[in-house]
Amino acid sequence: MRKNIVEYFEEAETRQEYKGYFCSIPEAIRIVVLGNIYGLRNISQIHQWAESESVIGFLKEKFGIEHIPCYYWLLSLLKLIKPESLNKCLMKWAEAMLPEERKGLTVSLDGKTVRSTCKMESYDSPLHIISAQISELGITFASKSVEGKSNEIPAVQQLIDELDIRDCLVTADALNCQRETAEAIIRGKGDYLLDAKGVKIGEWHYYISSRTLTSLELLHHARMEWAVDSMHWILDVHYSEDFFRIVNRTIQQNLNAFRKVALSMIKQFKADSNSKRPLSQIMFNCLLNPSDICTILENWFPCTLFA
Image (cartoon, rainbow, N blue to C red; front, side, top):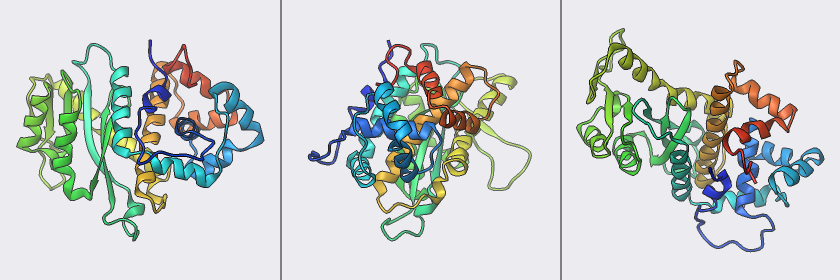
């Protein structure tokens, strides 16, 4: 039986022991993940939603959230969570969602710079986050933050070493078409399909693969590489991540992870229900009818919901 998502994230480590908060970190995680499923764009919107009279009772009854912290306490709790530890929790959760047969799955890797951090004095360098996505399922497998895009290549190789990619086909763009990257994938008992196109833009793409593929298989996995780009686009356009200015790097990293969790659940619900609605409409419908979120969560946790 699947554990509920909070059980995975309860293992997240904190930078220090926290005392004096009447709201626990698991409760804060529930509030933020739920707010992101509703499509709320920042902590201010999430907090305003959570403390509204029409929502407080709903959160207590359906999700066991006894206390709603004030805005600054919510920020303080998010700041305590170690992003590296949160990512390990995300990896365990994603692995539990994987089917036994992985032969046809694509793991797509790509990095994204959070543009709002480019000129902020509190950041030594722009925040650049690498994502690994199980493209066919729409699930973010893992994330890793690095100091700027120039460090993406070694970070991708480190992330591959941390992932369970056995039997999967790993795709990446031309930047990561590196011998060491290919070797890391083979060590993980996966296969690779690396884009070897030049800097120049053209109609022809060239790939290097460790697996013999038919033309249709090549087309499928090559297109699946775009899934992670699509997810980054949603982070920018729907969640306005590139405009979200917050001075604390840890909070920015953790919010990025929680947004990806929310998107993973919504995408899987959309696929399983054969819904033709766009993701934004599914989110908005949940906001208009709060109980609709239970349908999404039951798709993942049929026995325990979210509490």
